[in-house]
Length: 496
Image (cartoon, rainbow, N blue to C red):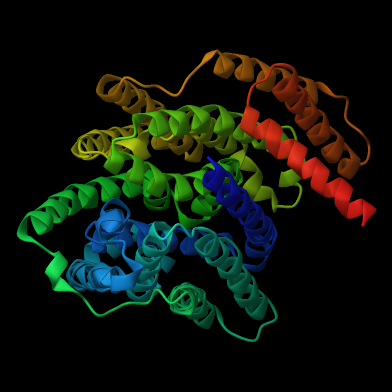
């Protein structure tokens, strides 16, 4: 776990710096600078771009993670694997762009009644899709080289800083909204370009293919995996964005903006999990290749308790201070409090279930991921169709929470049946009790007249209770070591 912990720590630091920048953007700048409909437009377009990029990739992102260990050979320039990684998705992009052009009218019509602004900027989806697609491919490649920190820096910090600059330029009236949208899309292009330059700086930019390594059995194996990984990743990404897309189509872009703000707050809970997955998945793939079940089991078990505790602390910090957070927002955004509650619970469920999806996707029975996720997409769409007309944006959050719960129950059972391992222990139950106690105590503190003091004190009490629980009840050796090392580092800095 040494490499995992080191890179997870670096990724988490970058992710939270990015989250702070994102907080300023999503909670302050965008809602105040843009009209709610304009802000909602940017969220819907990003969701469409993310799902579209998964479709256009034709599974090459997952193929890179799964099969790069077979190509790894610095002396042979990894047999020019990057050439295959970037050329295959180009075909997918061209095909998807053609379909997007042909079906332009019905797609625009879906949003036309309450989200007319979408039609005005529909064509911007094509460059946005291209930029997101190739950043995704390059990120998968650099992750396979066990370098996840740079991608996190580009994704979570630089991209958001670029978007901060663009929205400020619009705020000062230097550009009209149309130019703002072009520049907003351009930030994704700049992100992809910087990733390409970074790979070149690392001397890993090998585009000359070596076809000698592509034996017919290997090609068939990769193609078979790509087909299932393609459908699996597309359905998984659809599952993660269908709520935003359906809120935009079934309500309006203004409601989408409200939903997006609360969704962003809940997404902060899972930042440590994203960092862990980035470095753990290639290591799980290596362990699968070597049939090292002990390593897989260790990563699986530790991922559950560590993610649950860290995610729980973040849930507590945000949850007990939700009223203070919404003070930063215009009044119409306050309706999203219950969205945060349900999406936050969904994130906690997903983190507590451990890295079950990563284990399945890197195994020989990866096909299950496709079948299970397809059924879950159907469930999510059905529950959204039922809940959104009744409960509005809160209904979309409820549908997401239900889908995530079903998804993880199915995956945990499947890994248990296949490998005989599960991520849970008695420490999970103890940890849940500690988190609930911390939440109730922090929530029940009488309100201070100064909101800043109240916010900090509630958060500090919640964190302190969980920290004491980690040590006294021996909930996580990894987190104990991390806390000790962080404290020692702070002490050394003060002495210096």
